[in-house]
Image (cartoon, rainbow, N blue to C red; front, side, top):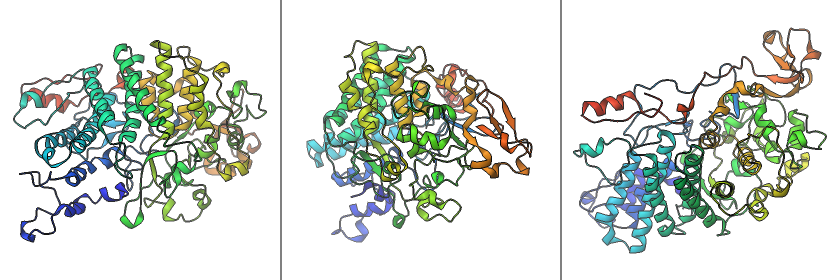
Length: 614
């Protein structure tokens, strides 16, 4: 059963739970479950149907239609890897009038890469726990009871992990709260450490009680462990780098390592798929690296638009910049400043595609593209075939919101990178075991050993040399407060997860939000080295006079004046590119809406504002 095919039809599928031998007039409603008198929580099928309602909220994949929430390319566009024309998107600068919802359909917040002030999904998870204990338990086996309780506690932990990443301190609700329990409903925020300790307990229960296998594409212990490695790495490193609580940091990082090892030691997944096919395949079933995926199918009207926003024509608005491009390791394993590769200092796209880690060529079209503000056009989420339609009519698979490529929800590469980073932080700060070459081989080098697809091989793309712990690259731009090993682990994440959903969250947990200040590096406003008369002559027209500019290696800026074609060779300058407004450290966390604070006050309670936003 392909679970994501059927969840969207939740209401219709509820008909399956009506007994066929009951008189028609005695049947419960066909489009909703009946949560009363034990009519619904009769067996595992009933429980499963309720649990399925969590899937599309947490395992978003490419979402559906034109929805951008939690999607790559369109959703996660606020980070330092991407630059747009004109002034960059600003951080929030004042307390919003309202920031809250009680709806399960509440939208996320792109600038915080997480949910708004909404506890509907916490309540839903608590309802599942409550009904399992009060109604369903006598109707199912003890093993089933523990499994479904683990499912509920996983989703509760998932939601609180996201809420804490956005707001820090949040009120913790460990049970269903009734409408008349005002003292509990209007409780103030609990410290993030206390909340995450509850999440930690939930996750421990999950890893001990969730089924190892509950059927194809259904949540199981390995899928849960993969996500737990993500959330525990985030909180452990956030607590450490923000000097909040190192005791808790060690606790969470230890669980991140244990959860990752549960997946890795199972040997169920391996790096035998090429990188490109992970994001642009019509069917990810059986892909050896994908732990969970979301299935799309036109016949069921379950489609997305992410492929179209990678097709070489559609404009995203913010695109990969030169800072990102320069961060890609050379395929000889060195940073470009120290590489002996003759193309190391050549930042033309065609050269970079052949001399950098192969994920560059698989993620960015190997020629300049005017649909991109920077001329670096990201096509990681479209097939190689998709970009052959540039200038033509796109088929439904790569145009509009009718795309049907499957979405990897979580994959082995994330797990091993979570693992190696958690181990390295533990080793460097908390007396953990030193990182060995075997650890690097099992994680970073295993990723680098992925096979190349035929098209990449035909171009001359080469795999990247192994990272050797005895001879780590010497990067002249490494932050002084980051060790060479941690720096390379962070680089690997940046290359691996380009245009996915990690970069802003990584900057926040590393306490590196200052990277979002583009005044620190002029390369943020540059694209590739380009010979415009040859590579993009359409950019030199009468309509672009005094608009199109390039920057020479010595810093000289040349502006197109209508007759200086031969001089228009250099780094592409993003048109009117300007830095975002000044921001400070309060932007690590979101403020609560003034409306929510007033609502508390009007009922005689206090809701504390996020620090820095008073």
